[in-house]
Length: 121
Image 1 (cartoon, one colour):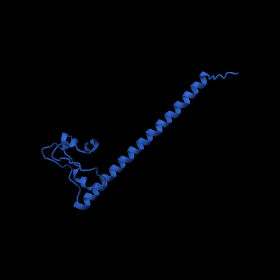
Image 2 (cartoon, rainbow, N blue to C red):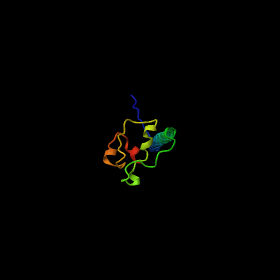
Image 3 (tube, helix red, strand yellow):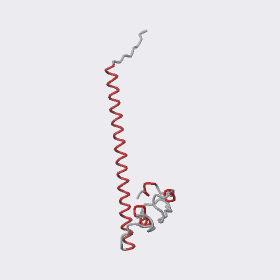
Image 4 (cartoon, rainbow, N blue to C red):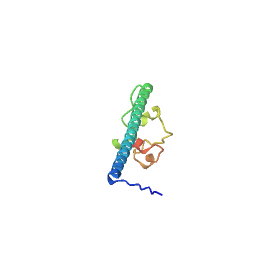
């Protein structure tokens, strides 16, 4: 009865490990690029939706919306300037229930059903 012995040299083991590492690195790079492309695509779609919202606002009111909306008591950087085009956007996510009299980063506005990045100004 002959006994089978599996022998592998250190050089071959290192070669297999290196090749595996290169394959894994390539897959990680490919997935990373795909994720970045998807983010870029989503951003472009959001910008297109904002542009369409501005065009829709213009067609209804024959002017563009004012720079900011909200209480005059609020500092300019705390006002919500994009609320005027919200009804004109083609992509909407439920009822935002955003209070234009409150700063954009107030507790009430941050607890709405809109994602936090939509309220970042």
